[in-house]
Image 1 (cartoon, rainbow, N blue to C red):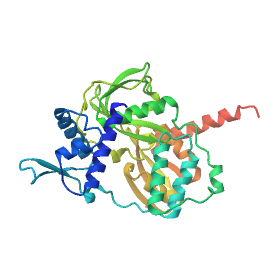
Image 2: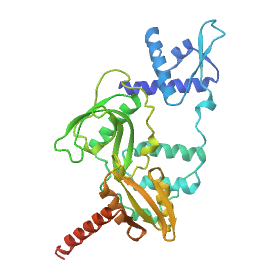
Image 3: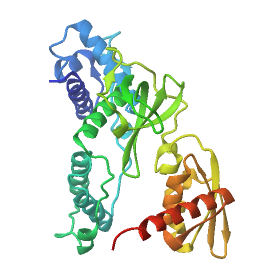
Image 4: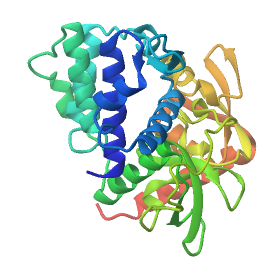
Length: 341
């Protein structure tokens, strides 16, 4: 079994044992009862047990260490069910069915399809929910864009990056950035993975630039390698806020270079305000809808988004961006006019 799988199994077994015990348990009980510890020497067990508790503590699961009155100076360990359990997640039958239908639509096109399926099965069993016998007819008319990254290479890189993220391992890979002439090697401390408009990105500390950067996974041109053999290469990030990358629009991949004034009509206003609320610089209500101030790093994805929504979204400024959009539309019309019917 791979070392990472061994560690996962051992930590899950530790959690299961402590939760089932419902009382503080002595160190020797842990060593004798938890999968993976019994075959270790006392020195190896002491180190692994400490490392496992630290990993779980960083994940938000705190195993309490207590004085064991049965052993005098000995120690005992306890995990409270109240501290361990997440808040109840209550889904309506309609919400649950919608998630199941989304899984059907994304079948064989989503790298995390298996854990999503397992999560839905567990939720359904816990709440006594079952999806409708058949997906509604409209799901057959939904197409998944070809731009979604789901090749074997992308899946392999995602698995490697996810492992490095959880283990806090520095990685290196060859990367071909936008506008770069030749691919170059990058050294990164991975902090998280995000899906933006069908493309997977890894966010992390770029050692060469000494700054937080996003890297599109399908632009990685090599295998993802660990830089060292140490258990951890970097401490948990303190100045990193994952919420800043949730639902991040494609026009904000990088440092903002300008702001656009976008008018959104009432039919779409609710969706824009909910989806991009973390990335809106300002807003004001007008008779025709809402004016949003949207920062952008690359204007072209923003203009493409404006065009996609047709009459629901309109670019109101600045003038140079309006001119860029007008020129792009004229060029597109000219190309279509030249096509043979």
